[in-house]
Length: 483
Image (cartoon, rainbow, N blue to C red):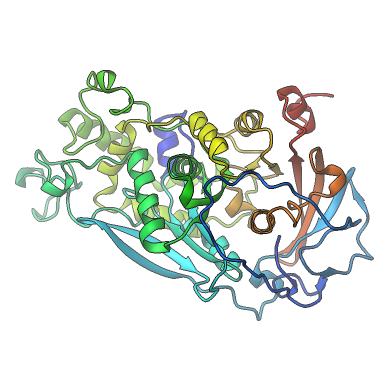
Protein backbone atom coordinates (compact mmCIF):
# COMPACT_ATOMS: atom_id res chain seq x y z
CA UNK A 1 0.00 0.00 0.00
CA UNK A 2 2.97 2.36 -0.04
CA UNK A 3 2.16 2.25 -3.68
CA UNK A 4 -1.28 3.39 -2.60
CA UNK A 5 0.15 6.28 -0.68
CA UNK A 6 2.33 7.49 -3.53
CA UNK A 7 -0.70 7.75 -5.75
CA UNK A 8 -2.51 9.93 -3.25
CA UNK A 9 0.34 12.24 -2.30
CA UNK A 10 3.54 12.53 -4.29
CA UNK A 11 5.68 13.69 -1.39
CA UNK A 12 5.17 10.61 0.79
CA UNK A 13 7.67 7.78 0.31
CA UNK A 14 7.26 4.02 0.31
CA UNK A 15 8.68 1.27 1.68
CA UNK A 16 9.57 0.21 0.25
CA UNK A 17 29.39 -9.64 7.18
CA UNK A 18 28.13 -12.77 6.57
CA UNK A 19 29.29 -15.98 8.10
CA UNK A 20 30.60 -18.74 6.12
CA UNK A 21 30.56 -21.14 3.36
CA UNK A 22 27.41 -23.06 4.07
CA UNK A 23 25.42 -20.04 2.95
CA UNK A 24 27.74 -19.21 0.06
CA UNK A 25 28.11 -20.67 -3.39
CA UNK A 26 30.20 -23.82 -2.85
CA UNK A 27 32.08 -23.17 -6.07
CA UNK A 28 33.26 -19.85 -4.68
CA UNK A 29 33.62 -20.24 -0.94
CA UNK A 30 35.30 -22.90 1.13
CA UNK A 31 36.26 -23.36 4.75
CA UNK A 32 34.40 -23.99 7.98
CA UNK A 33 31.70 -21.85 9.41
CA UNK A 34 32.95 -19.57 12.18
CA UNK A 35 31.08 -19.39 15.42
CA UNK A 36 29.59 -16.04 16.39
CA UNK A 37 30.07 -15.48 20.10
CA UNK A 38 28.22 -12.86 22.06
CA UNK A 39 29.57 -11.29 25.21
CA UNK A 40 26.06 -10.55 26.40
CA UNK A 41 23.55 -7.92 25.42
CA UNK A 42 23.36 -4.83 27.55
CA UNK A 43 21.42 -1.59 27.27
CA UNK A 44 23.17 0.73 24.87
CA UNK A 45 22.41 4.04 26.53
CA UNK A 46 25.39 6.35 26.27
CA UNK A 47 27.28 4.27 23.70
CA UNK A 48 29.34 6.24 21.24
CA UNK A 49 30.16 5.31 17.71
CA UNK A 50 32.99 2.79 18.09
CA UNK A 51 36.15 3.22 16.03
CA UNK A 52 36.52 0.55 13.38
CA UNK A 53 39.80 -1.18 12.72
CA UNK A 54 40.90 -4.24 10.78
CA UNK A 55 43.62 -6.63 11.77
CA UNK A 56 44.81 -7.08 8.22
CA UNK A 57 44.11 -6.01 4.67
CA UNK A 58 43.34 -8.19 1.68
CA UNK A 59 43.39 -7.86 -2.05
CA UNK A 60 40.00 -9.54 -2.02
CA UNK A 61 37.38 -9.78 0.64
CA UNK A 62 35.17 -12.62 1.74
CA UNK A 63 32.86 -12.88 4.63
CA UNK A 64 34.49 -14.58 7.60
CA UNK A 65 35.58 -17.56 5.58
CA UNK A 66 38.17 -18.65 3.05
CA UNK A 67 37.67 -17.79 -0.58
CA UNK A 68 39.19 -19.14 -3.75
CA UNK A 69 39.73 -16.09 -5.96
CA UNK A 70 42.40 -17.20 -8.37
CA UNK A 71 40.08 -16.86 -11.35
CA UNK A 72 38.58 -13.52 -10.34
CA UNK A 73 40.14 -10.39 -11.88
CA UNK A 74 41.51 -7.90 -9.36
CA UNK A 75 39.74 -4.82 -10.66
CA UNK A 76 36.34 -4.08 -12.08
CA UNK A 77 35.84 -0.69 -13.65
CA UNK A 78 38.27 0.85 -11.20
CA UNK A 79 36.63 -0.65 -8.12
CA UNK A 80 37.93 -3.47 -5.90
CA UNK A 81 35.88 -6.67 -6.05
CA UNK A 82 34.32 -8.37 -3.07
CA UNK A 83 32.89 -11.85 -3.27
CA UNK A 84 29.92 -12.27 -0.93
CA UNK A 85 27.63 -15.22 -0.12
CA UNK A 86 24.38 -15.84 -1.90
CA UNK A 87 21.09 -16.40 -0.12
CA UNK A 88 20.91 -19.82 1.58
CA UNK A 89 18.87 -21.63 -1.07
CA UNK A 90 20.95 -20.17 -3.87
CA UNK A 91 24.25 -21.19 -2.32
CA UNK A 92 23.20 -24.77 -1.60
CA UNK A 93 19.96 -26.19 -2.92
CA UNK A 94 20.03 -28.87 -0.22
CA UNK A 95 20.51 -26.35 2.57
CA UNK A 96 17.54 -25.06 4.50
CA UNK A 97 17.08 -21.45 5.51
CA UNK A 98 15.96 -20.42 8.95
CA UNK A 99 12.26 -21.25 9.44
CA UNK A 100 9.85 -18.36 9.97
CA UNK A 101 7.05 -18.41 12.52
CA UNK A 102 4.03 -16.10 12.43
CA UNK A 103 2.36 -14.83 15.61
CA UNK A 104 0.03 -12.20 17.02
CA UNK A 105 0.64 -10.06 20.09
CA UNK A 106 -2.41 -8.59 21.83
CA UNK A 107 -1.33 -5.02 22.36
CA UNK A 108 -4.61 -3.13 22.76
CA UNK A 109 -8.31 -4.11 22.77
CA UNK A 110 -9.20 -5.45 19.32
CA UNK A 111 -5.72 -4.54 18.03
CA UNK A 112 -3.41 -7.51 17.67
CA UNK A 113 0.05 -6.87 16.27
CA UNK A 114 1.18 -9.39 13.69
CA UNK A 115 4.86 -10.29 13.62
CA UNK A 116 7.17 -12.91 12.19
CA UNK A 117 10.21 -14.41 13.86
CA UNK A 118 13.19 -16.59 13.00
CA UNK A 119 16.37 -17.73 14.72
CA UNK A 120 14.78 -18.41 18.10
CA UNK A 121 17.30 -21.22 18.57
CA UNK A 122 20.21 -18.75 18.51
CA UNK A 123 20.27 -18.29 22.27
CA UNK A 124 22.40 -15.33 23.30
CA UNK A 125 22.75 -13.97 19.77
CA UNK A 126 21.91 -10.32 19.06
CA UNK A 127 18.24 -9.42 18.61
CA UNK A 128 17.37 -7.69 15.34
CA UNK A 129 14.00 -6.05 14.63
CA UNK A 130 12.91 -5.03 11.11
CA UNK A 131 10.35 -2.27 10.57
CA UNK A 132 8.56 -2.09 7.19
CA UNK A 133 7.61 0.76 4.91
CA UNK A 134 4.08 2.04 4.53
CA UNK A 135 1.57 -0.41 3.08
CA UNK A 136 3.66 -3.54 3.39
CA UNK A 137 4.53 -5.60 6.43
CA UNK A 138 6.74 -8.27 7.89
CA UNK A 139 6.43 -10.26 4.65
CA UNK A 140 8.68 -7.69 2.98
CA UNK A 141 11.60 -8.96 5.10
CA UNK A 142 11.26 -12.64 4.27
CA UNK A 143 14.76 -12.72 2.75
CA UNK A 144 16.23 -11.29 5.94
CA UNK A 145 14.28 -13.57 8.24
CA UNK A 146 15.39 -16.67 6.34
CA UNK A 147 19.04 -15.67 6.01
CA UNK A 148 19.92 -13.61 9.08
CA UNK A 149 17.84 -15.95 11.24
CA UNK A 150 20.68 -18.46 10.87
CA UNK A 151 22.90 -16.28 13.05
CA UNK A 152 20.65 -13.91 14.98
CA UNK A 153 17.27 -13.76 16.65
CA UNK A 154 15.21 -11.83 14.12
CA UNK A 155 11.77 -10.22 14.31
CA UNK A 156 9.72 -8.23 11.79
CA UNK A 157 6.37 -6.66 12.64
CA UNK A 158 3.39 -5.03 10.94
CA UNK A 159 2.53 -1.52 12.06
CA UNK A 160 -1.01 -1.24 13.43
CA UNK A 161 -3.41 -0.21 10.70
CA UNK A 162 -1.28 -1.99 8.10
CA UNK A 163 -0.39 -5.51 7.02
CA UNK A 164 -2.07 -8.07 9.25
CA UNK A 165 -2.21 -5.65 12.20
CA UNK A 166 -5.60 -4.26 11.22
CA UNK A 167 -8.34 -4.28 13.89
CA UNK A 168 -10.35 -7.42 14.45
CA UNK A 169 -13.61 -5.48 14.82
CA UNK A 170 -15.18 -2.48 13.12
CA UNK A 171 -13.98 0.69 14.93
CA UNK A 172 -17.06 2.65 13.79
CA UNK A 173 -19.82 0.34 12.53
CA UNK A 174 -21.94 1.53 9.62
CA UNK A 175 -25.69 1.93 9.86
CA UNK A 176 -28.01 -0.61 8.23
CA UNK A 177 -28.63 1.47 5.09
CA UNK A 178 -24.86 1.85 4.61
CA UNK A 179 -24.25 -1.88 4.38
CA UNK A 180 -23.69 -3.77 1.16
CA UNK A 181 -26.33 -5.55 -0.90
CA UNK A 182 -26.58 -8.64 1.27
CA UNK A 183 -27.43 -6.46 4.26
CA UNK A 184 -24.91 -8.19 6.49
CA UNK A 185 -21.46 -6.82 5.89
CA UNK A 186 -20.57 -3.10 5.62
CA UNK A 187 -18.62 -2.10 2.55
CA UNK A 188 -15.96 -0.50 4.70
CA UNK A 189 -15.22 -0.70 8.39
CA UNK A 190 -14.88 2.62 10.18
CA UNK A 191 -17.44 4.43 8.02
CA UNK A 192 -20.16 4.68 10.66
CA UNK A 193 -21.26 7.69 12.69
CA UNK A 194 -20.14 6.61 16.17
CA UNK A 195 -16.87 4.96 17.24
CA UNK A 196 -16.71 1.93 19.46
CA UNK A 197 -15.41 2.70 22.97
CA UNK A 198 -12.07 1.02 22.30
CA UNK A 199 -11.55 3.14 19.16
CA UNK A 200 -12.39 6.61 20.51
CA UNK A 201 -8.74 7.65 20.78
CA UNK A 202 -7.48 5.54 17.89
CA UNK A 203 -5.48 7.34 15.22
CA UNK A 204 -2.85 5.65 13.07
CA UNK A 205 -0.04 8.12 13.67
CA UNK A 206 3.73 7.89 13.85
CA UNK A 207 3.46 8.43 17.62
CA UNK A 208 1.26 5.34 17.85
CA UNK A 209 3.77 3.30 15.83
CA UNK A 210 6.67 4.48 17.97
CA UNK A 211 4.80 3.40 21.11
CA UNK A 212 3.88 0.11 19.45
CA UNK A 213 7.52 -0.70 18.71
CA UNK A 214 8.59 0.42 22.18
CA UNK A 215 6.16 -1.92 23.89
CA UNK A 216 6.99 -4.72 21.47
CA UNK A 217 10.67 -4.48 22.35
CA UNK A 218 9.90 -4.31 26.06
CA UNK A 219 7.20 -6.98 26.26
CA UNK A 220 7.91 -9.41 23.43
CA UNK A 221 11.66 -9.24 22.79
CA UNK A 222 12.63 -8.20 26.30
CA UNK A 223 16.05 -6.66 25.58
CA UNK A 224 17.71 -3.91 23.51
CA UNK A 225 17.68 -4.54 19.78
CA UNK A 226 19.31 -3.61 16.52
CA UNK A 227 16.64 -1.75 14.57
CA UNK A 228 16.49 -1.88 10.77
CA UNK A 229 13.87 0.26 9.04
CA UNK A 230 12.94 0.81 5.40
CA UNK A 231 11.20 4.05 4.36
CA UNK A 232 8.52 4.74 7.01
CA UNK A 233 10.11 2.00 9.12
CA UNK A 234 13.36 3.97 9.10
CA UNK A 235 11.58 7.06 10.38
CA UNK A 236 9.93 5.09 13.20
CA UNK A 237 13.21 3.31 14.08
CA UNK A 238 15.01 6.63 14.41
CA UNK A 239 12.10 8.17 16.35
CA UNK A 240 12.11 5.29 18.83
CA UNK A 241 15.89 5.43 19.27
CA UNK A 242 15.71 9.18 19.92
CA UNK A 243 12.91 8.74 22.47
CA UNK A 244 14.12 5.56 24.21
CA UNK A 245 17.83 5.08 23.47
CA UNK A 246 18.18 2.45 26.19
CA UNK A 247 16.11 0.07 24.03
CA UNK A 248 18.27 0.38 20.92
CA UNK A 249 21.76 -0.99 20.22
CA UNK A 250 21.95 0.51 16.75
CA UNK A 251 19.80 1.81 13.90
CA UNK A 252 20.16 0.97 10.20
CA UNK A 253 18.25 3.23 7.82
CA UNK A 254 17.28 1.71 4.47
CA UNK A 255 16.12 4.59 2.27
CA UNK A 256 14.37 6.11 5.28
CA UNK A 257 11.73 8.70 4.55
CA UNK A 258 12.79 11.97 6.24
CA UNK A 259 9.26 13.22 6.93
CA UNK A 260 5.89 11.85 7.98
CA UNK A 261 2.58 13.47 8.83
CA UNK A 262 1.50 16.90 7.64
CA UNK A 263 -0.79 18.02 10.45
CA UNK A 264 0.72 19.63 13.58
CA UNK A 265 1.38 17.43 16.57
CA UNK A 266 -1.12 18.05 19.44
CA UNK A 267 1.59 18.00 22.12
CA UNK A 268 4.16 20.02 20.25
CA UNK A 269 1.77 22.58 18.76
CA UNK A 270 -1.54 22.38 20.67
CA UNK A 271 -2.97 25.70 19.46
CA UNK A 272 -2.18 25.06 15.82
CA UNK A 273 -3.51 21.50 16.13
CA UNK A 274 -6.92 22.81 17.23
CA UNK A 275 -7.32 24.69 13.96
CA UNK A 276 -7.80 21.43 12.08
CA UNK A 277 -11.30 19.90 12.28
CA UNK A 278 -10.15 16.30 11.93
CA UNK A 279 -6.88 14.52 12.64
CA UNK A 280 -7.36 10.87 11.70
CA UNK A 281 -9.60 9.75 14.55
CA UNK A 282 -12.77 7.65 14.28
CA UNK A 283 -15.38 8.13 13.00
CA UNK A 284 -14.34 9.54 9.63
CA UNK A 285 -16.21 12.74 8.71
CA UNK A 286 -18.79 12.24 5.95
CA UNK A 287 -16.75 14.26 3.43
CA UNK A 288 -13.64 12.21 4.16
CA UNK A 289 -15.63 9.00 3.76
CA UNK A 290 -16.78 10.01 0.29
CA UNK A 291 -13.29 11.08 -0.71
CA UNK A 292 -11.78 7.87 0.65
CA UNK A 293 -14.16 5.71 -1.36
CA UNK A 294 -13.14 7.48 -4.57
CA UNK A 295 -9.42 7.42 -3.84
CA UNK A 296 -9.45 3.87 -2.55
CA UNK A 297 -11.02 2.57 -5.74
CA UNK A 298 -8.03 3.89 -7.66
CA UNK A 299 -5.13 3.13 -5.34
CA UNK A 300 -6.25 -0.40 -4.43
CA UNK A 301 -6.55 -1.38 -8.07
CA UNK A 302 -4.11 -4.26 -8.79
CA UNK A 303 -2.76 -2.57 -11.90
CA UNK A 304 -1.90 0.59 -9.95
CA UNK A 305 -0.13 -1.43 -7.28
CA UNK A 306 1.89 -3.43 -9.80
CA UNK A 307 2.88 -0.28 -11.68
CA UNK A 308 4.21 1.30 -8.49
CA UNK A 309 6.16 -1.84 -7.58
CA UNK A 310 7.82 -1.73 -10.98
CA UNK A 311 8.69 1.89 -10.36
CA UNK A 312 10.42 1.40 -7.02
CA UNK A 313 12.37 -1.72 -7.99
CA UNK A 314 15.32 -0.75 -10.17
CA UNK A 315 15.86 -4.32 -11.37
CA UNK A 316 12.67 -5.46 -13.10
CA UNK A 317 13.88 -9.05 -13.15
CA UNK A 318 13.31 -9.26 -9.39
CA UNK A 319 10.31 -11.46 -8.67
CA UNK A 320 7.64 -9.32 -7.02
CA UNK A 321 4.60 -11.58 -7.45
CA UNK A 322 4.58 -12.70 -3.83
CA UNK A 323 4.92 -9.16 -2.46
CA UNK A 324 2.23 -8.03 -4.89
CA UNK A 325 -0.24 -10.71 -3.80
CA UNK A 326 0.33 -9.93 -0.13
CA UNK A 327 -0.30 -6.22 -0.67
CA UNK A 328 -3.51 -7.09 -2.54
CA UNK A 329 -4.59 -9.27 0.38
CA UNK A 330 -4.17 -6.32 2.76
CA UNK A 331 -6.26 -3.99 0.57
CA UNK A 332 -9.14 -6.49 0.67
CA UNK A 333 -9.51 -6.22 4.44
CA UNK A 334 -12.65 -4.19 5.31
CA UNK A 335 -10.66 -1.99 7.72
CA UNK A 336 -7.95 -1.06 5.19
CA UNK A 337 -9.65 1.94 3.54
CA UNK A 338 -10.50 3.75 6.80
CA UNK A 339 -7.02 2.98 8.14
CA UNK A 340 -5.57 4.57 5.02
CA UNK A 341 -7.66 7.71 5.57
CA UNK A 342 -6.63 7.91 9.22
CA UNK A 343 -2.95 7.62 8.27
CA UNK A 344 -3.27 10.33 5.65
CA UNK A 345 -4.74 12.84 8.11
CA UNK A 346 -2.80 11.81 11.23
CA UNK A 347 -0.57 14.44 12.86
CA UNK A 348 3.20 14.36 12.61
CA UNK A 349 5.46 13.19 15.40
CA UNK A 350 6.68 15.13 18.39
CA UNK A 351 10.18 15.05 16.89
CA UNK A 352 11.19 15.73 13.32
CA UNK A 353 13.56 13.39 11.50
CA UNK A 354 16.42 15.86 11.97
CA UNK A 355 15.66 16.29 15.67
CA UNK A 356 15.64 12.52 16.12
CA UNK A 357 19.06 12.33 14.44
CA UNK A 358 20.37 14.95 16.83
CA UNK A 359 19.05 13.17 19.90
CA UNK A 360 20.52 9.86 18.75
CA UNK A 361 23.91 11.53 18.37
CA UNK A 362 23.71 12.98 21.89
CA UNK A 363 22.63 9.60 23.32
CA UNK A 364 25.35 7.75 21.43
CA UNK A 365 23.00 5.53 19.42
CA UNK A 366 25.01 4.14 16.48
CA UNK A 367 23.49 4.74 13.05
CA UNK A 368 24.31 3.16 9.70
CA UNK A 369 22.98 4.36 6.33
CA UNK A 370 22.24 2.01 3.42
CA UNK A 371 20.53 3.64 0.47
CA UNK A 372 19.56 2.37 -2.97
CA UNK A 373 20.83 4.90 -5.49
CA UNK A 374 17.99 4.46 -8.01
CA UNK A 375 15.19 5.18 -5.53
CA UNK A 376 12.68 7.44 -7.35
CA UNK A 377 11.20 8.71 -4.05
CA UNK A 378 13.88 8.92 -1.34
CA UNK A 379 16.66 10.16 -3.59
CA UNK A 380 20.32 9.84 -2.50
CA UNK A 381 20.25 13.50 -1.51
CA UNK A 382 18.26 12.58 1.63
CA UNK A 383 20.86 10.07 2.77
CA UNK A 384 23.58 12.63 2.10
CA UNK A 385 21.79 15.16 4.30
CA UNK A 386 21.88 12.64 7.16
CA UNK A 387 25.57 12.04 6.51
CA UNK A 388 26.19 15.77 6.53
CA UNK A 389 24.40 16.18 9.87
CA UNK A 390 26.20 13.17 11.42
CA UNK A 391 29.60 12.91 9.68
CA UNK A 392 30.78 9.94 11.76
CA UNK A 393 28.07 7.52 10.56
CA UNK A 394 28.95 5.06 7.80
CA UNK A 395 27.11 5.59 4.52
CA UNK A 396 26.70 2.81 1.94
CA UNK A 397 25.15 3.66 -1.41
CA UNK A 398 24.04 0.60 -3.40
CA UNK A 399 23.60 0.62 -7.16
CA UNK A 400 21.65 -0.52 -8.99
CA UNK A 401 18.98 -0.65 -6.29
CA UNK A 402 15.73 1.23 -5.72
CA UNK A 403 13.57 2.12 -2.75
CA UNK A 404 13.57 -1.37 -1.21
CA UNK A 405 17.21 -2.56 -1.36
CA UNK A 406 16.60 -5.25 1.27
CA UNK A 407 14.22 -7.03 -1.11
CA UNK A 408 15.89 -6.12 -4.39
CA UNK A 409 19.51 -6.90 -3.42
CA UNK A 410 19.13 -8.83 -0.14
CA UNK A 411 22.53 -10.46 -0.55
CA UNK A 412 24.21 -7.06 -0.32
CA UNK A 413 22.06 -5.67 2.48
CA UNK A 414 22.39 -8.86 4.56
CA UNK A 415 26.16 -8.80 4.06
CA UNK A 416 26.41 -5.20 5.21
CA UNK A 417 24.06 -5.77 8.17
CA UNK A 418 26.11 -8.71 9.43
CA UNK A 419 29.29 -6.66 9.21
CA UNK A 420 27.70 -3.67 10.91
CA UNK A 421 26.42 -5.78 13.82
CA UNK A 422 29.80 -7.51 14.20
CA UNK A 423 31.52 -4.13 14.27
CA UNK A 424 29.25 -2.87 17.07
CA UNK A 425 29.27 -6.10 19.07
CA UNK A 426 33.10 -6.15 18.95
CA UNK A 427 33.31 -2.51 20.11
CA UNK A 428 35.11 -1.72 16.86
CA UNK A 429 37.74 -4.48 16.94
CA UNK A 430 36.11 -5.89 13.81
CA UNK A 431 36.19 -3.44 10.91
CA UNK A 432 33.09 -2.03 9.29
CA UNK A 433 32.03 -4.09 6.28
CA UNK A 434 34.21 -3.45 3.22
CA UNK A 435 36.45 -1.01 5.13
CA UNK A 436 40.23 -1.48 5.26
CA UNK A 437 42.44 0.57 7.58
CA UNK A 438 43.75 2.88 4.89
CA UNK A 439 40.18 3.76 3.84
CA UNK A 440 38.61 3.94 7.29
CA UNK A 441 37.55 7.57 7.19
CA UNK A 442 37.55 8.08 3.46
CA UNK A 443 35.34 7.23 0.54
CA UNK A 444 35.72 4.39 -1.94
CA UNK A 445 33.79 2.18 -4.32
CA UNK A 446 33.76 -1.61 -4.55
CA UNK A 447 32.05 -4.22 -6.67
CA UNK A 448 30.18 -6.95 -4.75
CA UNK A 449 29.62 -10.22 -6.58
CA UNK A 450 27.41 -13.17 -5.74
CA UNK A 451 25.55 -15.99 -7.45
CA UNK A 452 21.88 -15.50 -8.21
CA UNK A 453 19.80 -17.95 -10.25
CA UNK A 454 22.95 -19.64 -11.46
CA UNK A 455 24.64 -16.50 -12.77
CA UNK A 456 27.15 -14.13 -11.26
CA UNK A 457 25.61 -10.79 -10.34
CA UNK A 458 27.56 -7.60 -9.64
CA UNK A 459 26.46 -4.65 -7.48
CA UNK A 460 28.50 -1.53 -6.81
CA UNK A 461 28.68 -0.14 -3.28
CA UNK A 462 30.06 3.32 -2.56
CA UNK A 463 31.20 4.04 0.99
CA UNK A 464 31.61 7.40 2.72
CA UNK A 465 33.57 7.46 5.98
CA UNK A 466 33.90 10.03 8.74
CA UNK A 467 36.29 12.20 6.73
CA UNK A 468 33.73 12.59 3.96
CA UNK A 469 31.25 15.01 5.48
CA UNK A 470 31.13 18.24 3.50
CA UNK A 471 28.24 18.29 1.09
CA UNK A 472 30.37 19.01 -1.97
CA UNK A 473 32.78 16.19 -1.11
CA UNK A 474 29.90 13.77 -0.59
CA UNK A 475 28.47 14.60 -3.99
CA UNK A 476 31.85 14.08 -5.63
CA UNK A 477 32.57 10.78 -3.88
CA UNK A 478 29.18 9.42 -4.90
CA UNK A 479 29.57 10.63 -8.46
CA UNK A 480 26.62 13.00 -8.33
CA UNK A 481 28.70 15.89 -9.59
CA UNK A 482 31.85 16.05 -11.67
CA UNK A 483 35.13 16.21 -9.78
